[in-house]
Amino acid sequence: MIIAIDGPAAAGKGTLARRIAGALGLPYLDTGLLYRAVGRLVLDANGDPADPEVAAAAALRLKAQDLARSDLRGGPADKAASQVASIPAVRSALLAFQRDFGQRHGAVLDGRDIGTIIFPNADIKFFVTASLDARTARRHAELLGRGEAISANDVRNDLVSRDEADANRKAAPLKPAGDAIIFDTTGLDADAAFRLALDMIRARTGAAP
Ligand code: CDP
Image (cartoon, rainbow, N blue to C red):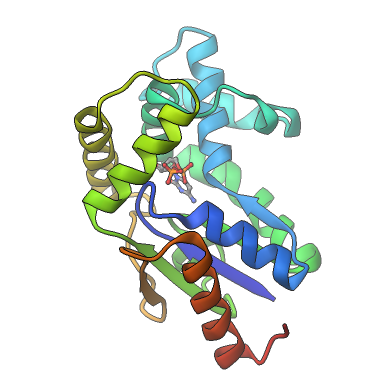
C-alpha cells in the first residue's frame, strides 16, 4: 500500500506520516530530507543552491548517510532545500529513489508532489494543511525547542516565502492531487489528526488496524 501525504511547510505532515507508518507497519520516507540534503551539499561546497548545474551534480552524488545529517533543518537549510527543489534536473535525479523505496514493500511518503508526480496511483492521498497561524506556532515551538533563537514573525515570513516558491515553481508545484483528501489540521493536536487520518484510511482502503 502507498500512502501519499503532501502539503505546505509545517502543516504536520511528518508527524502524521510517521505515526500512520508505525500503525500500519509500513516504511516511511520523509522526501523533504532528500531536497534538504542536496541543498546542504551545495552549501557545504560554498555553491549557490539556485544554480541548476551545481545543484543537479549534488543530487547525483547524494548518499544515504547524507539523509542522517543533523544540520538539515533551520533557516539556511530550509531555503536551500526549496531552491534546489525548483530545479527539474534535481527532481528527476531523486525520482527513481522515491519510487523504488515505495515499490519495495509499500510505504508512507510525505512531501509536495507524492500524490501528483511520484505516486499518482497511491492508494490514498492526503493534502495536509493548517492555517498560517497554526503552522507558524508549530514551527516556532519546534525551533525554540531545538535552541534556535528566532521570532515568530521571522518563522511566519520564512513559511510564506517558501510556500510561495513551492506553489509557483514550474517543476512539480505544491498543489493537491485531484483525488486527494484535503485534511485541515488547524485546531487538531497530533493525536486527533492521527486518529482521524486512520479512520479515513480504514474507510477508504479497509486497512487494519
Ligand atoms: O518540514 P517542512 O514542511 O518545512 O519541509 P520539508 O517537507 O522538509 O521540505 C523542504 C523543502 O523541500 C520544501 O520547501 C520543498 O521546496 C522541497 N520539497 C519538494 O519540493 N518536494 C518534496 N517531495 C519534498 C520537499
